[in-house]
Length: 368
Ligand code: NAD
Ligand code: DAU
Image: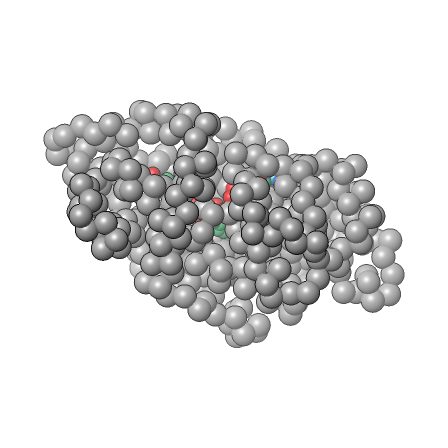
């Protein structure tokens, strides 16, 4: 039995589905079901007796205490978080509440639970905290990729709140000996990603003939990792990671946002060659930049490969094809996600970013 938090979100649900395929144990899945949590992500295991879903908050100490006491997990894997940088610019308080205060409350209950364990149960227990490469800040074009020794320099309310949670996890190991593991991963993409993040948003907009909003000059660089590879890495760290250690996880796939969006458009052109919006790249629209937009992230993932034998199985080319195909094959999921409050988010984030059809300075307003 393991306790997974945030297991109805993008990466968490992929992890739980993956766990059911690759492992024999059970999962208690604690998720608050915010806008980002979606039970449809878990539809494939709705009759699976090894999966127990509990709606609730990681900051609800009484609930966490009860779940730990009742189910006696051998590990807690913490995915629960507010995860979208643009939202953190609009509502930073929610990020502090879940990512910092929530993680603190979770750690306190886990510490009390672990303290009371004995023998092999105690020595085998792990708390794995899922974090991000954004805590390391922004790289220049020629800088070496982030290693586990790179100093923290978070730039957004999101990354600052994740950095704070990472520090708490580190302190709980150092001070209380809690057997923690921390992973810092680059940008994920794949099935079940909420269409507020770049790739999912671009697929959704392109298939509907809507503008594809590129922030700034589109030359910001991210390292992209297929979500299934991230899930495999977490399973490896949980099984073989050394307590108190940090593992960077990345795909060795640095791409500019423009490259990513052009790739998505080309794949969609192949699938929809007779569609009215072909070439989909004609929908690309440059919009006002994200405030404080980090220029480049890159991950040095040699430690996890050297020490634990993990490396990604998907290249960007194979992963992105699978992803586009998944969205095209799961339009009902997309339609359900894109109804209701999602429209409010689009208005809040994009209404004041008047767009132009090509790079800054050129003419042509676009409705976003
Ligand atoms: P997501 O936003 O898709 O999902 C987050 C999940 O957490 C949702 O199901 C939500 O309902 C749940 N949640 C939010 N607040 C909660 C609370 N207080 N209590 C319980 N559940 C709560 O996020 P994601 O993209 O799947 O990211 C998961 C984790 O991985 C996050 O910690 C994120 O920081 C980290 N991460 C994400 C990426 C990425 O590219 N998406 C990369 C590296 C690390
Ligand atoms: O690096 C890991 C992080 O990756 C995770 O910790 C975060 O949870 C996850 O959201 C992601 O953060 P980013 O800010 O990099 O992801 P996002 O998909 O929001 O944006 C990717 C890039 O695309 C970024 O440079 C901003 C740009 N972008 C994004 C959106 C939503 C656009 O140009 N237009 C858009 O509409």
